[in-house]
Image (tube, rainbow, N blue to C red):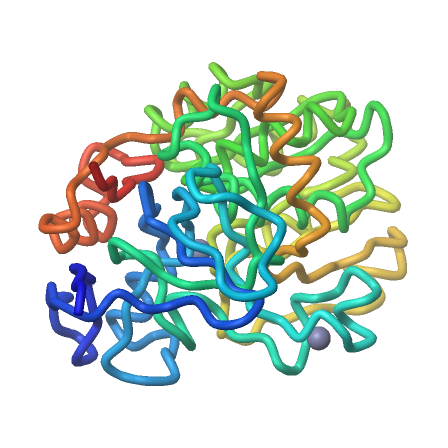
Length: 346
Ligand SMILES: [Zn+2]
Ligand SMILES: [Zn+2]
């Protein structure tokens, strides 16, 4: 039997272990993918720390994946070996009402790569062929991997906010998702795009990719700055990517009449809300956004292929699989403010 290496979470709170496993074989309708790049997401740290639950142990983590088709199972006809593909990380039924109406992130059968089933911190994995999307040679694997989560998640969230031409948008949290949210807001027609973060490096990066103004709460009075920048109106859309009740509060408070707040950061805390002052009086909306939809992929790939969505600043560091725990630690400590760390395979 041919074997491969995979980085597995064996025990909560412990470093991942590199294991030697059999290379999985594609069943009917599935493809075998030789992984070339897999991004490390903050969620991976949450799974490792036990703050978010994986559903089995041991499990191979990794849900932000790009690679090459290595083999096609019976009846899998969409791809040929060698095709470059990136993967939608939810394995869904494809038939239920949710799947058929573009809400496949709510398919009752959905299983997530690297959380419920083995993911991409491995040399190979199998997925249903409908989870794979080809992308052109001009997009390197490490950037293609990011399209599947670091780009797709804010894309989905900002689509939910229905940005209108000229809308002012506030992006709270300029990490692996925020740097893309800034660009996506511009592409969707935003007027001003305001980036907020505690790190001056992250804020200068946000400017580089198109933020028209930045706010650092350590130095600025947030409320006053929003007022100045929007001439007293407040923003039309605020997207929160951190997951603290304090920053969600800031997002809501920053929106003006008719403003929409999209919550993407995972925040299990309660937060106070006065329905009259916070919502009714300004006709505000608070939206949640989780994961992404398969339907988001073609547009994202096209935008990156055209160069309208620039991922050249998005990969801070590439590491081999053997150094995955170092990658997780760097992200956990925010050493040198990494945007995305990507595990790459030769
Ligand atoms: Zn993720
Ligand atoms: Zn379904």
